[in-house]
Structures are given as structure tokens and as C-alpha cells.
Image (cartoon, rainbow, N blue to C red):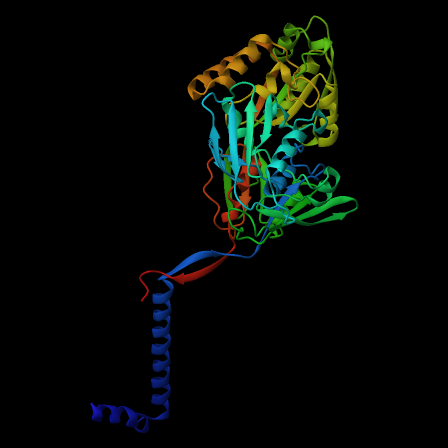
Length: 488
């Protein structure tokens, strides 16, 4: 062995220059291959894990107007707000109710009292404690018709009892099977006035409002930051940014240029884009409501003629309202043409979300065309029960029908899901007979996402577009590695 080592040491003295270069090159190649092999050996035994950091940017068409978690109807507004404000629970796309700020709840044997216990040490984004007083105050706000909240019908007939800072009871005047799902109501802080809340957006969700940008009095950007005291653990992605565009063409261009990481479309997808495309069925429906309280369409036979496209004995004028984003919907345009071909006069108004809410509240329309996000729990009571006809109610057709009321009330009292479904179907058949609405489309969400965004679950279905972000606390952009169990 000693002689072999000595020969290796003396070898360079016996090689010419060319042979030395060859030997050195071979040696370097062997070292490089060995290092690469070792690196592969180690790397293949490392576990890749999510790491904190990075910025996710969503692009949308349009402008936010009413950033209120308990009043906003606009989908883009509600998507942003759903990350800033959360409730006691969340309702999954398949109708399950899961805890969020609630630690637990107990339902009485008669189904009329729900007692919730909050998780300990809950905080608002400004560091103030979140207690049951905030829960009670939020319910008081949504129950006020002046708030014009889409959640108002959910809390009709509910009495709130604060037991202590973490325990609150809801007493129902009658059993209500879908009630548990309504506890996903986003909470607002009692220590901040509504005016200040519009400016500061102090919430309780996984992300806190950080800043916004405007240009020519139009909002161009909203920026959120991860909340360290989020009960589920601080989200991995540090910042979320929403950028607002004036057209779909400009939004798509921004996506192609890497200025935004994702955007959602309704109904159809923009072709030839990179990244992942999610095609998600949803519970969003585009509905035409006929206002049964209006003299010109109060008669059910008139409404049937309108939907069937048959000639009316007396021509009428129809005051129709919708949002600009829906005015060119092909099925809507086709329906207007049918009514015009009948000889009727069409007065169409395109209103922004604030003006549309005001007009709906005054019931000053014959026809409303709107996107309605139906609940996963089969509860259509808020849309059709006669008690929901007043200011702030969501009975857009102003329907007052005892048979429909009876079916909806019985469905709410029924715990058996199959029986509830049957009662709901019976109510819908009655609505069809009364010709009070027409469903033009059940709208899928088409979601484009840059492949650098990791951890997004393989969604199959959403109730509404904001549901895309239900699991955002587990998304990530950056990664880290740690040794796996097989690496010694």
C-alpha cells in the first residue's frame, strides 16, 4: 500500500504536459460528478415545506364602491372583505358548517337555542379584544333595515343573549334548520363607528387592510397584509394585492405580463393563457325578477305571456334595471327583444351597485336582472317569503303568496335534509306557476392562476366566487427544505 501511494505521488513527474492536462480534467470531472451525485442524494431526501413570504396579486374589472362587510353586494368587494372579516363559523361549498372564531356550540333539544363559545384571546386587527359584545352589535346592525344588509332575513325572529365575554346564545322564535349556516355572518367591531370602519376596515380575518391607491378619484389598488394573531395561524403569503382595471382586455394583458397572479371570469374562459385554469360550478344564478306589486304585471296571466313570448291583449311599458356588467348578457338581450317584438315599450337603466340597492329598496322597477348567490343549504326563504318584502328585504319580486310561505316555513322547520329538499322543490314549482322569475343562467367561475402560487386545493365546486379564497391561509409562494426521515 505504501508503494502504491508513493507511485501516485510520483506520477505527475512521469507525465508530459498534455497528459497532465488530461489527468487534471478527468480528476475535475470525477470531483464534479461526485459532488452532483451527493447533492442529488441529499436533495432527494429533503422535504419541501411552505415558507412565509411573497405577494399574491388578484386582478378584477370594475371599481369597489361600498366596502362594507355587512352590506356589499358586489362580488369583487365581497371577495376582498371576506379576507378581512370573518364570522363565528364558515359554510363550505357542500353545506357543512365549520368553526372559525367559535370554539364550540350547543343546540338545544327543541332546536330553538344555539349557544356559542368564542375561542380565547381573539383580537381585532388593531389589537383590541373581540368579544360577544361585538357579535351582538353586528347582529343589531344587520337587523336594522337602514343598513340594507343581505343578512337581515337570516336574523329575523332571533333574540341575542350575551352570557359573558366568550359565551353568547341565540334564541329563535321557531326551529330553523338552516340557522347554523347563518352564523358565518362577518363580524364588525363595536369600538369603531361605521364611518371610521369604511375608512380603516378594521377586521378580524386572516388578512388586515394595509393601504389603497387611487388615481383620478378611482381606486386602483387595495393591499392587505397577513394577520399574526389569526386563530388559525398566520398565513404564509405576506401580502395580498387587488388591482382594478377598466376592461377585461386590460386585465388579461396584465395577467400575461405577470402584473397579476390570478383573475376570475364568469361563464366563459379567455383562451391560450398560461397557468392553471379552474372551472368551478357555482350557486350563482342570473335571474329575471318580475315585480308582482306593479299594476302592469300584477296579473299572473300577463307575467306568463311575458315569459312565454305570446301576444298580450294590452301592450305595456316595462321599467327594467340591472348593472352595466349584465346589460349585454346574450340571454337578457334576447329576452328584451322578445318583449319588444310583442310590441311592449322597454325602458332599461344600468345602475352601479349603490344606485341599484337604492332602487331595489324603493321597489321602483317592473323587472330586475341580477346575479343572485343562492345558499348551499337549500334555504330560499329570504328571496320569496312575504315577510321579506319590506325595505331592506330580498323578496325582489314582492311576492305575497300564502302557499309559497307555507312551504318555505315548513322547510325551515324540517331537520331532515331529504324532506327539506322536497319542500323546496314544491315551493319552486309554485313559483314557476306564478311566473315571478326566470333563471337565465347558472354561472360557473373560471379562475386563472399563475403556477407560482402553491398550495391551492383541487376545488370542484364553489357557492360563490369568494369561496376560491376559503383556504388561502395555507397557500404559499416561497418554500424551504428540511431533511426527511431517511437522511442519516
